[in-house]
Structures are given as C-alpha cells and as structure tokens.
Length: 94
Image: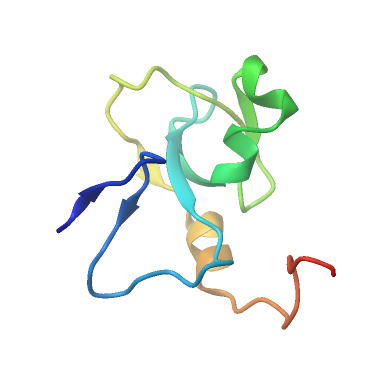
C-alpha cells in the first residue's frame, strides 16, 4: 500500500529506502520563491521552531506557508540529491 506511514513520510513501494537513507522534504522558500530539498532531520532539529532550515544546496530556507504553491525547483538541490555520498557518511557509530 502506498501512503503515509506513522512518521508521515511517503514511501514508494517500488524503491524502498535503505534503513539509514535520509528522507528529503520539498520546502518552498518565501525569500527566493524556489522549492528546496531539506533533510527531514533539519525539520525536527532545534532550529525547527524558527521556520528556517538548511537545504541540500546550503541555502537557508525561510519556509513559506504549506498552502503556497511550489516554486521552481532549486537546481543546486537537485544536483546535490543526485550526487552519491561517501561510504559511511552519516552512519551510526557503535
């Protein structure tokens, strides 16, 4: 079944993410009008109450209201999403 899980994140049945794969969220920036890609952990970090998050491209996103239509996708975020990460990066230490 496709839909929202207990965490509220969407998972496709065709390509299930690895257990340690980061989830990404599209967030429209009120400052530049673009839709940036933000890691889910950014949305739950200490800065979450400020409404400002660091996107994959490094831009600090000022989140637009969720009812706002998405802007043009950020090309730098898309490039960062498709760039393979180094092995072991972001892994948990034992």
